Image (cartoon, rainbow, N blue to C red):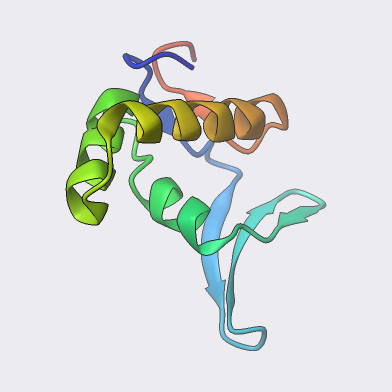
Amino acid sequence: MTPGSRPALPRFVKLRFDRARDTWLLLAPERILIPDEIAVEVLKLCDGEATLAAIAATLAARYDAPHPQILSDITAMLADLEAKGFLRDREAA
């Protein structure tokens, strides 16, 4: 993932709120991931249209945090999710 990447969930991965567990789940075939609150906020912005840099800017403004730090943090998080098959770069697909 780079600042120009356009992260998106693949068609077979869904971000859903589970009312029974009162938590968000990232669902993929035969796999479930329980993201923390921060990851959920990031994943909600991964629509395949916004670049990683734009997502970082949105979060920096929302939480009054430094853009470079947020960009670094979410780049690492999303790269990890990409490696596990829960996310893809729309441009690379």
